[in-house]
Image (cartoon, rainbow, N blue to C red):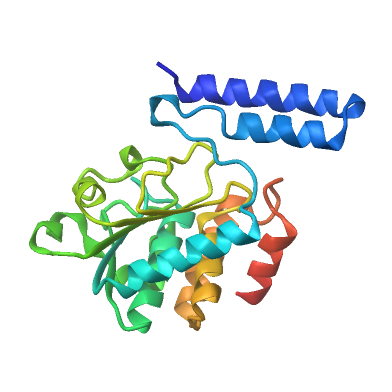
Length: 239
């Protein structure tokens, strides 16, 4: 059985080996090697998603997400267990954007265990996990979770039964959704929510901007981590 530890060790070894070889090999060969190990392991339901999506793939997936929204009315948004600032900020922002666009959309979390990001204004609109049984939805969206196993147990049945959109930035994220927008070069899930909002031409209000700002600040260590890119800073500037 392949474990996440095995995967990370394999990736680290291949990246190091390829970087060393790049000084003595053609660019074309290096690109071939990178492409090979970025898509190598699919065993154990584990997919590698390393590298930014190209423009065609981006357009295709964002348009597929648009069609999912257009076919839905009631939308549930979730993040991972014990949500941090990125997870909570992303789900609050996305659910609020969807409501402003005319959808009956709500985020859900254990409102008794939100921790430090619990100060966000959109927390008041969350549906407590314990009340989900009474609700029906057409579409399930989850953010900042590499696998459905990272979701609260109460929402996992929605991931199994409903059309699902995934927005995530982890390299080990599984493409198990009806539509998966996964980019490990993004510094935070909040960066992907911002891109989606721009693609859909949804206006951002102050509450959304604050939630996405907290998402970025959390997963970039206040823009100090290596994951911070020019794209991350452009997102922050817009917010």
